[in-house]
Amino acid sequence: MSTDVESALAESGLDSVPLLDHHCHGVTTDDLDRESFETYISESDWPAPDGATHFDSQVGMAIRRYCAPVLGLPSFATPEEYLERRRELGGVEASERLLRATGISDLVIEVGHRSDEILDPGGMAAAAAARAFEVVRLEQLAEQLLEELVRRGGGSDSFRDEFARTLDERLRRAIGVKSIAAYRIGLDFAPERPGDDDVDEAVRAWADRIARGGPSRLEDATIIRHLLWAAVDRACAIQFHIGYGDSDVDLHRCDPLLLTEFLRLSRASGARVLLLHCYPFHREAGYLAQVFPHVYFDVGLAINYTGSRSDAVIAETLELAPFHKILFSTDAFGVAELYYLGAILFRRGLARALDAFARQDDWPAPEMRRIVESIAFRNARRVYRLGDELFEPELGGGA
Image 1 (cartoon, rainbow, N blue to C red):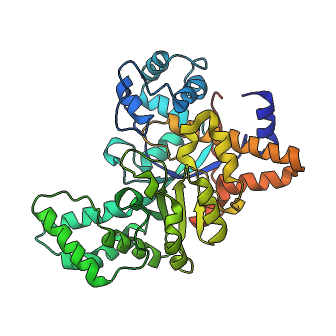
Image 2: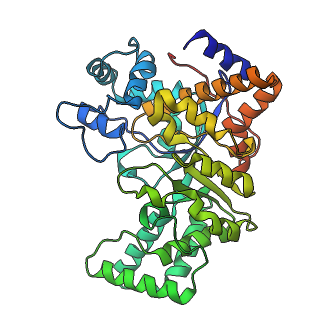
Image 3: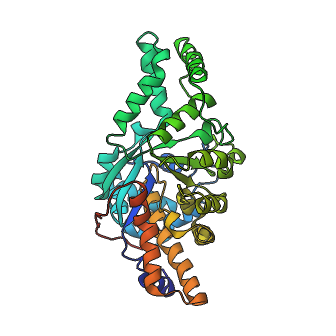
């Protein structure tokens, strides 16, 4: 990093402050070939066109700039050199080096996405030398439950009771839930709680489809609304996918402003709503975080994929939202590089934004330190009710 950025990091305290990653996933420790690695550094479901590479992107350039030194290479080693070094170290060693260099103290891991490919929360805690907590994906929980009910010979009429019991059981160890309503039905769903009869009718139709050999994928808006309100009733921390994602999403239906009436209806419930990723709707998310007492947000996924432009995205999150409503996240999945980039680009972007505010309006260093700690870990500890105890990892790395 340049000297001025190092100075800003030191002044703000961001060079040493631990990070609580409030939304992330496991990584693979397999020895990846190039094709496999490139699938993890793009949100596209498709390989790059013939003669091209996913390294030719903001995230690819950032990996070569920042991750290469952690693995013992010079910055901007070629993709071929980088992947050869990664295989030479082995997937386990490469992943542990990158994870432990992040300064992330706590991982809040959503376990519902391709969990058979990646480390579980316990494996991630060991690899990262951090603590790990679990978040349950509502739609997956419902799918697994109804598949089991159908295997047992029916029972769809008991779905509401069984789901309530199963959710309560999972929440004994999980610290929150997540919904991918944005993927399945869009965020323009009817915000009100659905009636029991309507839910039962929708579940019967879903169960009949599964019994006939159809897919178990949950795409019914009535049932998904029921799951969300079950979480609201339990005063959960509820994560919502917002905005940028893979090719499954219809981006125009992922604007968080579409949740406005749902947020009005749930604001006195005790539930906390966490808007994830949010790009390119991060300014809209900032507005919602300002006007609703139970709404929080991050720009985790966008930080990695905007790379050299991530400073601007981070600065824009600080325009309108109260600082006690912004959280740190990487949304890393699959490869540990995305954890390392998420951490280092966040530290850099927040430091540069605060340095600009200090230069323009004389923000005092103690105030900046307080804001840094709030966004880095204190807000998330409050939202997920984790208490004040903080595990401080050993910072390392080659940045």
